[in-house]
Image 1: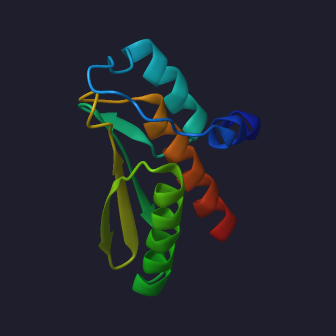
Image 2: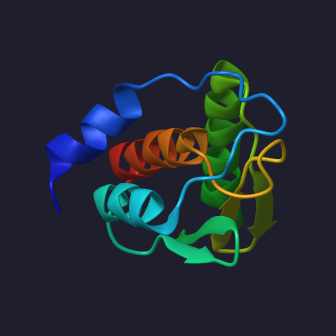
Image 3: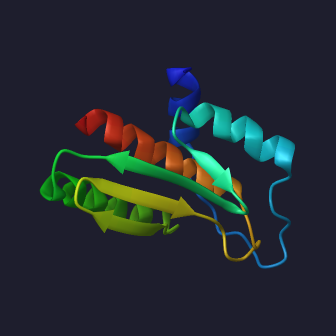
Length: 117
């Protein structure tokens, strides 16, 4: 995995995406997906990853970090918290699928997880 590609993606900033903007085509989202590293998948029109944790408390702490990232970027994932795991799901409502913002937030989440692991 190219750590510099992840860092470059995470350094970008989400921007508002107007309704009617086209979603990312497959070749574009595949290129961005490759930068995120293992575990991230695209299912339908959504970007997903489940992160493992040794306890509920550590998963909850991570989810709180995700909340800070989401508020900072004004782009909010769906989050599922359970004992020993936190699942993240991203997509852009205004485009009805994936946008660059989903991958920016995913990269920031991935970096936060790696920093805490």
